[in-house]
Image (cartoon, rainbow, N blue to C red; front, top):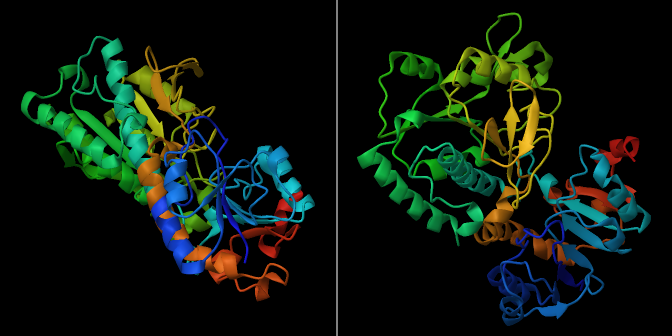
Length: 434
């Protein structure tokens, strides 16, 4: 029987997540009898003694494992030969920074299974952190805005709010945010930030995570089509927070003026252009929580922001949480990713420049590319609960035969990018990037 190993994450000093939590690991050991090794780490949220009590052994490197479970990319120099790796490889778009790692896995005759590609027959992801990126992103943007407003001399109930890393769990954060919500409900927000309007792009798992946080405030939900009228008529209250969720038909329109059609948009996105500029003057905070790739129009451009700040003085929009975090992508002013230590920078819409930090002039942009790492307790538990059902099949599979005969279920077979050193048919296009 193959051995299982949980590696120590080394992407950055804030990565505290684990692919399997001690409770789930205990069940798997009892169910399968597998020998499990846990690489020592001083960053992991779950401590080493929790894993040893669950039945695991400790180790100082990855050599003891046949099947190596991680979260983020593994440094090229740490890749060992003839292993089975599971982690988020960030290679399927041909990301240049990860091509050397991919080639090293191939040269070493190893197998790579990417969590992002563990999907069912309807192409729905089965192992993911999605919701918790939304939770952390919403928590962080409220913290950033509280400090941003305080720096401007505007006192709000958010001034003592914390970054997601400051909470033991999402429930802990929600309970404390409800207290802020109670203050807003009774005392109201200052006129300088009222009405506080939050717009969320997208309605999937990431968006639901963000909504899960914002709903702790005294929220009134507004349909996008009613937002402009609400703001023009001025019938708003400082005792509320207004929340609107944008779907595709609100974000884009056909260039030729024809009616929006979702399947047409997916099939031929070049026929469409963004229409978010119409809504931007209404928003205080924008949260980007929807999938995007280069085929689709940008949702917010530098030009949109320039027009906003030129035509509206002062402009209401002061914070963007780009949870999707595609650099130079759907939010054009996202010019670089950030990390938990310096999570945001300020974008100057007039000069198209950015400055690190969230205190000062400009639009604050949150661009942390691994937000779930800021809430490692909840995120790891959620992820582990999804992953554990696939582990017995991994342990029992025969990786010495063709992939189709390996015994891996279809969900895992679809996620195999490299098998015994060779790109699988669905991923041979990556040869063009190698």
